[in-house]
Image: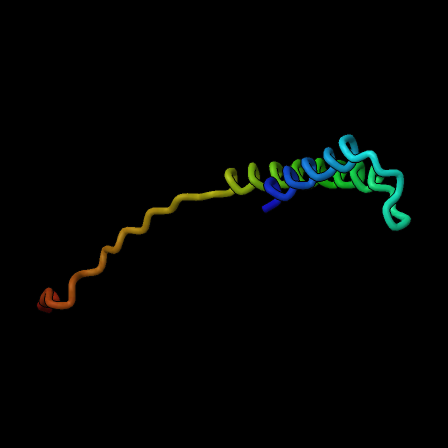
Length: 78
């Protein structure tokens, strides 16, 4: 989710920061909102990549061998 969210915020931030020519809508400067979204997207993308690489390095593969005898196998005689 971190990588996808980061890319989404980068796209929205780029559109709001560079493509929208509105000074203020309802008292909110859309260019500033765009640059904040760009910063948040870059941070989310970076953290998503770091988490992804940590998950890959922590993966252990363990093979279990069941050495029990089947139930119908007769027990050894004393």
